[in-house]
Amino acid sequence: MLTRRHLLALSSAVAPGVLPMLGLAGLPQRAHAATQRIVSVGGALTELIYELGAEADLVGVDSTSLFPVAATRLPNVGYARTLAAEGLLSLAPTLIVATEEAGPPTVLRQLETAKVPLHVLRADHRFEGIVDRTRRLGELLGRPTQASALIQRLQKEWAVSQQTVTRLAAAHRAPRVLFVLSNAANQARIAGTETAADAMLAYAGAVNALQGVQGYKMLSPEAAIAAAPDVILATTQGLESSGGADGLLRLPGLAQTPAGRQRRVVALETMEMLGFGPRLPQALTKLATALHAGAGKTA
Image (cartoon, rainbow, N blue to C red; front, side):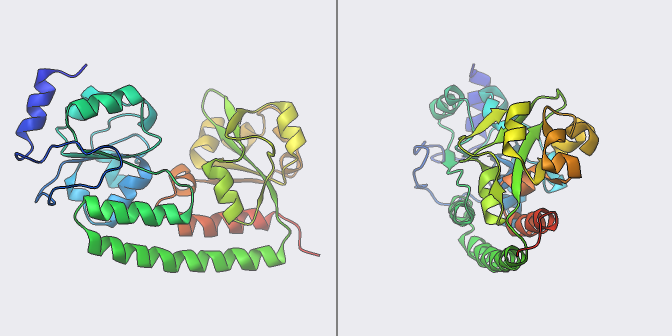
């Protein structure tokens, strides 16, 4: 519940005329404030804010904001999908940026009621999505020049990473890869189409071994064995919570797959691989190199 104290704290931190709410996708109609109080909900957005040199304006981040390490020292507003309005408003933000994955909707409506400028950017799992988000953040933060320079750098890095994928794909057959998202409770899900993992596998010249499924589904022995992956892909956080490769391969059915029998397990840091942020080009090079190393040679 929003309290009078939260609203007073918010209004006292903001110059008159700065707070009009413009709708989730609207363009800002005010000049860039000399000093903003920004809350970033989404690790990839936080990384972009640092890349744009606006980190001094950050007053809070969500729990997925793990890079750079400095971001972890900022006040944490919780997980992006389970936000609480009270925690956000206690930081007296003048701007909140988030992706479409932020929620729940009731909290977003509370923020609108409180007249906090909230901008929700598309969670587009494509390289073009990074370009769009970078340009949009440049507008919102009053840093269009820095955004243009970052976009040019990312485009060059992306071209290099794509050349690496092309070279690897010419030398190896496309590996079948099963992405497994696990946690400390030994609960695991596997990724089908229309997921960030599926998009990364396609960019890396690999085949998603889980076909005919949209989104995530719970891992079962039947699903794992039917997928018959050459490589099992995980996040480093998930691998650690499972007890390493040995622990991961004890999950239902994974040891019975070609990847499990050959112990072909690849892991990358979660937001680097799935965040579709400024580290994407480097993540793609790492991922493609690791996946194709376990695949057979092209005939």
